[in-house]
Image 1 (cartoon, rainbow, N blue to C red):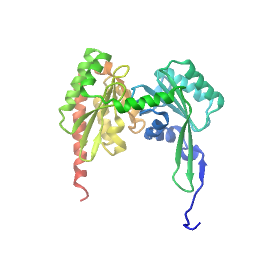
Image 2: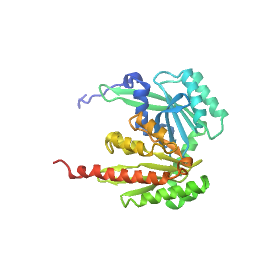
Image 3: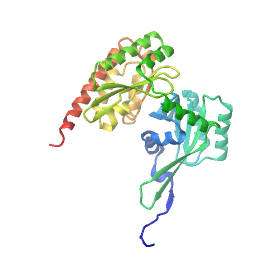
Length: 332
């Protein structure tokens, strides 16, 4: 060849060469790269917990589809599909009432594909089962490149994905949409509490904002900015009930935003509120890389809960500002 260009060969790599341990390597990678799984599924995934407890068992990943608010569970393995994991996804689906059930593996046996297809045919439209094959390739000594593809999906899923894309591009919620949606899904006491929490966040000042999403139902996410640091400490979703997510991964960001010591102080401050002890414990177990979801009731109807959460968020904001101040000065 005249121009001496080199053309390499694409080589398949065993998944075990890239991720040696399912729980310690593969599950955290999926949690940190939810966008890769989102793209192949046609969902807008927000994975918020790894090794989520379901009775005496532990589900690999749990989260939500930001567009619909539907619960999504993910069970993954590094070997070809087996009966054990098929049984696990059924157990976890029943224990979480998930709308989207995702099984990730390097390959799927024909009988396991057929089992998921049968489930898609027999269950209602509100429950969907997916098989996602993960392959890994590289050229020479280049970085590993994971390739994900759908092996099983609901029959009409392609059409639904196109419809969802229109919904995502055409619907952006506003402050005026949120509270009516909250009142339609929750008690007056919960609605009043959420209104008070939003008012408290607004009092933090112009660097504390609120993002109203483009999900199927109205939602809101609190934002805080201090210098080069940004965090989104909590969100509220209103699809099929009202839930509050504590975005531990956004607050901590593996120590790049706020320290592990601060996370522990937050846990000590709020851990006795309904649902929060388990939320902090689940976050602590994976280095705070979780966004646990807590039911708005009984959390927001607990005496003094809103005031305590607002106080903790005020302290969080001041800690963010204190952390950002030296960074803005640059190197000495």
